[in-house]
Length: 526
Image (cartoon, rainbow, N blue to C red):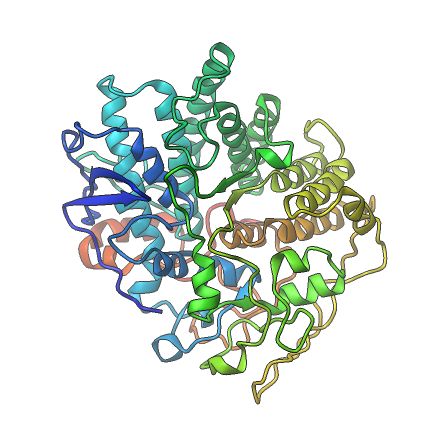
């Protein structure tokens, strides 16, 4: 893996697929200003493509290697911390995020950089255009949904962030609570605009040429906005339970994803080419394989989705790698199961199965979700099977199994040191009307399996709920993170310490603890 990410200064040119869209941006995080007159001659709707290519997974653009951005921004953090994948490389002499060391700015800065020097400058250009009447409310509503999807991942990684005053002369860090309440406000505005638009012009597709997610179908964008609102509502349930219930209920009443074709994925479309970066990571770099936790759960459950998620190991079967191995030898682990991802595989943003499991949890909390916890739980499994080209009958058989449990992990690699691990999970598959915590563990465990490979979201849900029971890293090289509690956040970017120290100190005061991977986020209160 090459590490050549550079901070973008002043004006820059952002390329999205084969569309060229000029947008002013700055890497000087003190102000985040942009020039509202910098892109007046371009087709502004192309910035929707730019935002899509960068918003949730940074896989667009040409100024830096998009695969490296994806790997350092997401794969080396969320994908590994969620227990989805394990990387086996001795980056930075073994001092890297895989063993809880974040000294190297090339790792910990990426997600922040992508959001604030790529996504948000495009959004700001569209905001100026909207304010001056150059683009309509509906187009800006889509931009706002993309904004929230990008920025909530920043706050879910770092904590406080400079969000609500982006583009103003001063853009201070704000608490996660302030950021989250802003996200709900922005989503509510977008939902209101799109609801009116779809009611009045159900067949209109203003973004049909530039929307690589839904082909300009606003009815789908409306469902996505409500589904993201439901996701974020559940995220705050342990810190703002009444507000969480209110927003979750509103989202369901307004209309969330219910079928597999509602799912949001980024894929090649018309003249927009999307290459899934995981293909290069597992194949070109040989840096990602199935994790030991995935091995324990999916092999234990004899899960039919194994073949959809992973390739067979060199010796046969599906076998993983323990997370957090210090100074591994790559050749020892190449034969383990790689992700079953090709360049053309759509990048998953939010799937209908996730929404069903969110509703299952809401129903278990006695919220009005439109059904029972059991019905949504089983529906989530069925949708996940459908999303992976498996039958509803296979899903029903799987969901009805009351005996299978996660199994011990056996290290089948070629390494001299074997990391065999006793199973932590004991939960079975079939729904049982037990106590709330048992229901929650069952829901989140199946939700975790269904969300693969969206590791950032899965890591957030693990931190929020404690489920599933993810194996701790084998070699914790940090000085402050508890191995059993596991990492809770990513420390603030080195670029911020270098260029924006006063603001970072404010951010730390809002964090409620030291700038450490051990400090819990605002919503991490269970």
